[in-house]
Image 1 (cartoon, rainbow, N blue to C red):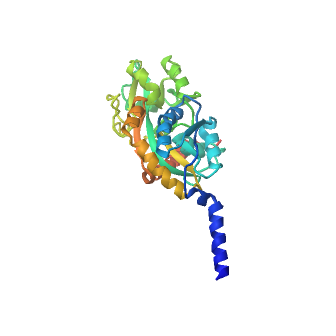
Image 2 (cartoon, one colour; image 1 turned 60 degrees about the horizontal axis):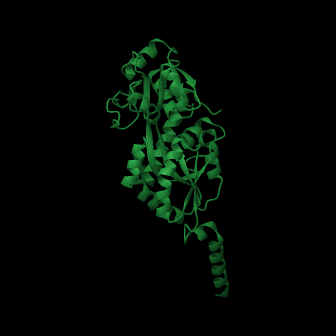
Amino acid sequence: MKRYLFFTAICALVYLVSPAGTQAKGYPDRPVELVIPMAPGGGADVSARMFSDELGKALKVPIIVVNRAGGSGVQASLYVARGRKDGYTLFLGSGTSLIVMPIINKEATYDPLKDFIPIAQFVSVPSAFVVRSDSPFRTLNDLIEYARANPGKLKNGAGGLGTESYFNLALLCAKEKIKITTIPFKSGGEALPALLGGHVDMASNTITTVGPQIKAGKLRGLAITSDKRVPDFPDIPTTAEAGMPDINFRTWFGLFAPAGTPQSVINVLVPAAAKVFKNPEILQRAVRAGFVADYKAQAEFRAFIKNRQETAGKVAQEAGLSKK
C-alpha cells in the first residue's frame, strides 16, 4: 500500500512539473506572443493587429505582436515550430508560409499539420488576373487563346514565386497547356508599376493590391479566385464562372499553436479565437481593409489545409516547381 501511495505521489509530481500539467490550470496568466511572418505594414501584420487586441481581451492578457520577416514566412514558421509548446507563443500562419514554402523551399523543413495545431482561419484575400484597361483581352479565355497561339510571348509580373497568386498562374498554364513568361518581382506592389507602365502584359495578384487600380480604371479584372463575386468588384467573374473552378488559390491567414501544445491550452484558444473571429465589428474592419471575412472553425480549417496541401503539391509537380 505504501509503495502504491509513493508511486501515485511521484506520478502526480511529474505531471505538475510537466508542460501539460502546468498548463492544465490558470492559462494564460501572462502576455502571449503572436508571431507574424512579415514586416510591419504587410498583409499579415495588418490582419494580426486587427484582431490581437480583441484576442487579448478574450484571453484577459496582453497579446504582443512580434514581426519575424524573412524567407516568405519560413523563418517565422521555424521559430514557432521549434519554440516552446506552452501556449505563450502563437503564430499567424498563411498559405504562403505553411503550404507553398514547404513545397518549393528546401529550408522550410516543417509540415503545417504535423508541426502546428490549427486554431481557426480568420480572413482570406482572393487573387485576380488583371491586364491594363487598354489591353485587347476582355476575358480570361481571350488571354488563354492568345497565349496558346503565341507561346511565351505574354509576360506576367509576379510578386514572388512562392505566393498563392503565382500558383494560380502556374496552375492555369499547366491545365490549359500554355506558356506565359514570368518576370519575378519582390512583391506584388513592385510588380504593379511594371504592369501599368507596359513592361509586362498581365499580372496575377491579390485584389487588395490591384483593386485600387481597377477602381481607377487603369486595370481590367479578367477573373477572381473567390467562391462568389466580390461586392466591390461585381463585374469581375470568378474563375469558376470562367470555367476554371480548380484555379482558386487565395491568400489566407489563421491562428496556429506549435504541435505539442497541451490540449488544455488549445481548449482555451479555440473558443477565444471563435469569439474574436466571428465578432461583426472585427469582420467589418477586415472587409474595410480589403480582406474577405472567411472564418473557419478548427475542424474545417484542418480539412482545408490538408486539401490545399495536396492540391498545391499536384500544382507544383504539374508546373515543374521543385525545392530550391
